Image (cartoon, rainbow, N blue to C red; front, side, top):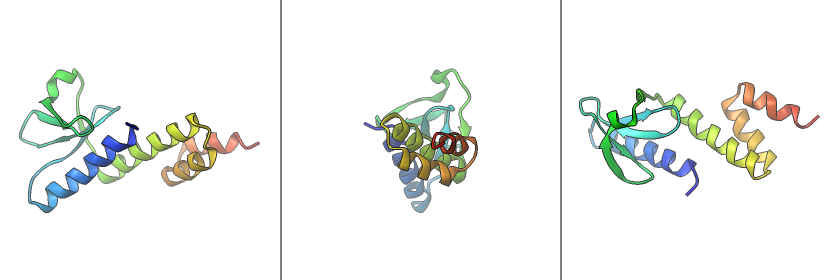
Length: 110
């Protein structure tokens, strides 16, 4: 399973929860995206559909706004595209997120 899919599932699940009136949102350990409720220590790993105590990760989970979540997915797309040699997709995704990563990819064209 590609790394983008669990992140996308986390976003869709968070939106569905919001529409259902549930207080569930996206959190991150800096590497993966999870779903969490603000009043419970339990988190869901969307790619594995696994429920566990977030404290077992041994790192702080930080709440992610929509922009941070989108940037995390775009970073994953850029990494995969660059790894597979799809520079066009990598450039497109990095242009959407902007920043140093996009400049680094542009420099590869020279």
